[in-house]
Amino acid sequence: MAVDFPEEIKKLRTTMDSVREVTDLDSLRARISDLEAKSGAPDLWDDPEHAQEVTSALSRANSELERVESMDSRIDDLEVLVEMGQEEGDADTLAEAEADLATLTKDVGELEVRTLLSGEYDERAAVITIRSGAGGVDAADFAEMLMRMYLRWAERHGYPTKVMDTSYAEEAGLKSATFEVNVPYAYGNLQVEAGTHRLVRISPFDNQGRRQTSFAAVEVVPLIESTDSVEIPENEIKVDVFRSSGPGGQSVNTTDSAVRMTHIPTGIVVSMQNEKSQIQNRAAALRVLQSRLLLLRKEQEAAEKKELAGDIKASWGDQMRSYVLNPYQMVKDLRTDHEVGNTAAVLDGDIDGFIEAGIRWKLSADKE
Image (cartoon, rainbow, N blue to C red; front, side):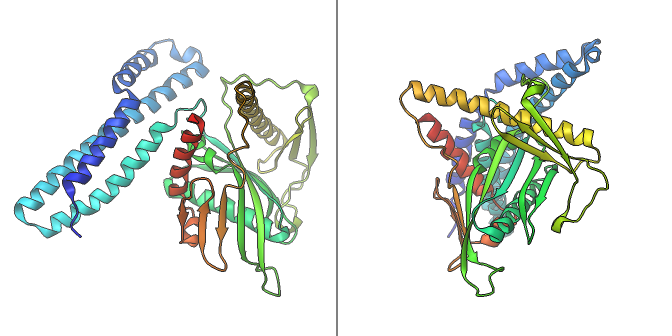
């Protein structure tokens, strides 16, 4: 079936009109001009922390402007390519235009979703913690599968990651793991992955080959920044030191460098063991604890507002996705109804469709 290029290009331009409206390019250019003036101040680096904030903000603003402008340029180039192919009756040129259209449609869709991320912490890097739930060794194995899925997703996009803590289960898999995705908007994208994930499959650990259902929980918090005000009194923190361990309980460190930090008032526990020293692990644990408390504070504020409005709903993240590998193959998001039959691709990090659908669903739910 022939592609209706004029109609498809019209759709792309309509979407970009919405993106430009939300982005407000005039305000963005004014902000860039202001940040450039600040970054050129001779005394800027007298305060390194402030200088870093200014230069980072300028870089993000320039990248945002470039993304929008380059997408408009690509649509113009596509239109010219289509005109050339149609005028000359060149099938190869039209085939190239069709391939470009598919890529451009995907990229414009992603840019549209990116403009929807306007929450207070959406621009932040993310800290993801995965914990095995009900299901024994299958749940621990599932937790490790999910960790690999997210790390592969980050790798596909060229996003830097850092594993901060891994607690291995006795037989196979993970009891829990914590890692960073250190790129702007990682939290805005990945926050919709928070909740309970369910796996249904023939258990590789059951010698009778029975089907097993297991669960894992995913927590996503924005990475704390130096400008955040999250002070934790020393008397509210309990710190335990223990020996780092690898798979099967094997020691990978001859010193007791791992740190377990407990926030006494809330019961939140953070463990870190992947840094080389106890001091580094303690600093990393404190940073993640502050990130969790920051998000908890915002959730409590939101809950209080809902209570005042007389509308309290269950958390949108619970029981959010099923991965069925037997008797059929399907990954389905229970909130958005987005589903994919290629389970191997999803578990290998191809989750952009789920993330995009989740962001649109969350924004719609927030408005309600």
